[in-house]
Amino acid sequence: QVQLVESGGGSVQAGGSLRLSCAASGYRYSTYCMGWFRQVAGKEREGIALIYSAGGNPYYADAVKGRFTISQASAQNAILRMNGLKPEDSAMYYCAATRWYGGSCPLDVGLYQYWGQGTQVTVSS
Image 1 (cartoon, helix red, strand yellow):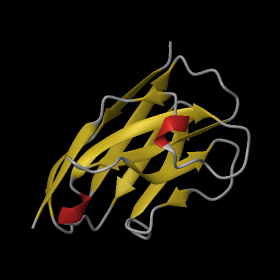
Image 2 (cartoon, helix red, strand yellow; image 1 turned 90 degrees about the vertical axis):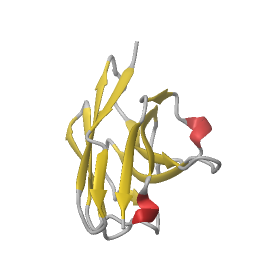
Image 3 (cartoon, helix red, strand yellow; image 1 turned 45 degrees about the vertical axis):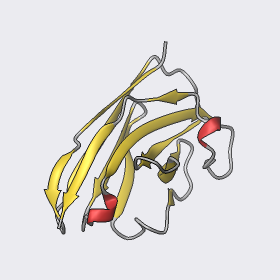
Image 4 (cartoon, helix red, strand yellow; image 1 turned 180 degrees about the vertical axis):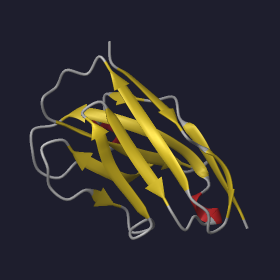
Protein backbone atom coordinates (compact mmCIF):
# COMPACT_ATOMS: atom_id res chain seq x y z
CA GLN A 1 0.00 0.00 0.00
CA VAL A 2 1.38 3.38 -1.00
CA GLN A 3 1.56 6.04 1.66
CA LEU A 4 2.72 9.64 1.42
CA VAL A 5 3.57 11.53 4.59
CA GLU A 6 4.28 15.25 4.58
CA SER A 7 6.20 17.15 7.20
CA GLY A 8 7.67 20.60 7.66
CA GLY A 9 4.69 22.91 7.60
CA GLY A 10 4.17 25.62 10.15
CA SER A 11 3.87 29.34 10.71
CA VAL A 12 6.33 31.91 9.47
CA GLN A 13 6.45 35.63 8.86
CA ALA A 14 6.38 37.08 5.39
CA GLY A 15 9.74 36.79 3.72
CA GLY A 16 10.64 33.68 5.66
CA SER A 17 11.35 30.17 4.50
CA LEU A 18 10.01 26.69 5.07
CA ARG A 19 11.01 23.26 3.85
CA LEU A 20 8.38 20.62 3.20
CA SER A 21 9.25 16.95 2.91
CA CYS A 22 7.20 14.13 1.41
CA ALA A 23 8.17 10.59 2.32
CA ALA A 24 6.72 7.83 0.16
CA SER A 25 6.49 4.19 1.13
CA GLY A 26 5.25 1.19 -0.78
CA TYR A 27 5.95 2.92 -4.08
CA ARG A 28 7.24 0.59 -6.76
CA TYR A 29 6.74 2.47 -10.02
CA SER A 30 9.85 3.05 -12.06
CA THR A 31 8.59 6.34 -13.49
CA TYR A 32 6.18 8.72 -11.82
CA CYS A 33 5.26 12.29 -11.11
CA MET A 34 5.45 13.56 -7.59
CA GLY A 35 4.86 17.00 -6.25
CA TRP A 36 2.92 19.49 -4.29
CA PHE A 37 -0.57 20.89 -4.47
CA ARG A 38 -2.08 23.47 -2.19
CA GLN A 39 -5.60 24.39 -1.25
CA VAL A 40 -7.22 27.31 0.46
CA ALA A 41 -10.66 26.83 2.01
CA GLY A 42 -13.33 27.41 -0.58
CA LYS A 43 -10.97 27.15 -3.54
CA GLU A 44 -9.82 24.35 -5.78
CA ARG A 45 -6.67 22.44 -5.09
CA GLU A 46 -3.90 23.63 -7.40
CA GLY A 47 -0.62 22.15 -8.48
CA ILE A 48 2.33 24.35 -7.60
CA ALA A 49 5.47 22.23 -8.01
CA LEU A 50 5.76 18.86 -9.77
CA ILE A 51 8.70 16.72 -10.76
CA TYR A 52 9.00 13.76 -13.10
CA SER A 53 11.17 10.93 -11.84
CA ALA A 54 12.97 10.35 -15.13
CA GLY A 55 14.17 13.92 -15.50
CA GLY A 56 13.20 17.09 -17.28
CA ASN A 57 12.41 20.48 -15.88
CA PRO A 58 10.08 20.61 -12.92
CA TYR A 59 6.79 22.43 -13.23
CA TYR A 60 6.15 25.51 -11.13
CA ALA A 61 2.98 27.54 -10.94
CA ASP A 62 3.52 31.17 -11.87
CA ALA A 63 2.64 32.21 -8.32
CA VAL A 64 5.65 30.38 -6.87
CA LYS A 65 8.15 30.47 -9.71
CA GLY A 66 11.50 31.80 -8.57
CA ARG A 67 10.67 31.33 -4.89
CA PHE A 68 9.93 27.61 -4.53
CA THR A 69 12.19 24.72 -5.52
CA ILE A 70 11.22 21.07 -5.74
CA SER A 71 13.78 18.30 -5.65
CA GLN A 72 14.05 14.61 -4.94
CA ALA A 73 16.31 13.66 -2.06
CA SER A 74 15.76 10.07 -3.13
CA ALA A 75 13.30 8.02 -5.15
CA GLN A 76 11.04 7.96 -2.10
CA ASN A 77 11.41 11.50 -0.86
CA ALA A 78 10.52 14.84 -2.40
CA ILE A 79 11.49 18.19 -0.92
CA LEU A 80 9.86 21.59 -1.46
CA ARG A 81 11.96 24.54 -0.42
CA MET A 82 9.89 27.68 -0.06
CA ASN A 83 11.64 31.03 0.16
CA GLY A 84 10.29 34.55 0.18
CA LEU A 85 6.98 33.37 1.57
CA LYS A 86 3.98 35.65 1.22
CA PRO A 87 0.67 35.71 3.10
CA GLU A 88 -1.04 34.46 -0.06
CA ASP A 89 1.04 31.28 0.18
CA SER A 90 -0.94 30.33 3.29
CA ALA A 91 -2.74 27.08 2.52
CA MET A 92 -2.89 23.38 3.21
CA TYR A 93 -0.11 21.76 1.24
CA TYR A 94 -0.53 18.22 -0.08
CA CYS A 95 2.02 15.86 -1.50
CA ALA A 96 0.75 13.75 -4.40
CA ALA A 97 2.12 11.07 -6.69
CA THR A 98 1.04 9.17 -9.76
CA ARG A 99 2.50 6.64 -12.09
CA TRP A 100 3.55 8.49 -15.23
CA TYR A 101 5.19 7.48 -18.46
CA GLY A 102 6.68 10.69 -19.79
CA GLY A 103 5.99 14.24 -20.75
CA SER A 104 4.92 17.00 -18.45
CA CYS A 105 3.43 16.08 -15.12
CA PRO A 106 -0.34 16.53 -15.08
CA LEU A 107 -2.02 19.32 -13.15
CA ASP A 108 -5.36 17.52 -12.91
CA VAL A 109 -5.82 16.43 -9.29
CA GLY A 110 -7.96 13.54 -10.52
CA LEU A 111 -4.92 11.96 -12.18
CA TYR A 112 -3.03 11.57 -8.93
CA GLN A 113 -3.76 8.29 -7.17
CA TYR A 114 -1.84 8.92 -4.00
CA TRP A 115 -2.11 11.80 -1.56
CA GLY A 116 -0.64 12.75 1.75
CA GLN A 117 -2.69 14.00 4.66
CA GLY A 118 -1.61 17.59 4.14
CA THR A 119 0.44 20.03 6.16
CA GLN A 120 -0.61 23.59 7.00
CA VAL A 121 1.51 26.55 6.01
CA THR A 122 0.59 29.92 7.48
CA VAL A 123 2.41 33.11 6.52
CA SER A 124 1.73 36.23 8.53
CA SER A 125 2.30 39.75 7.30
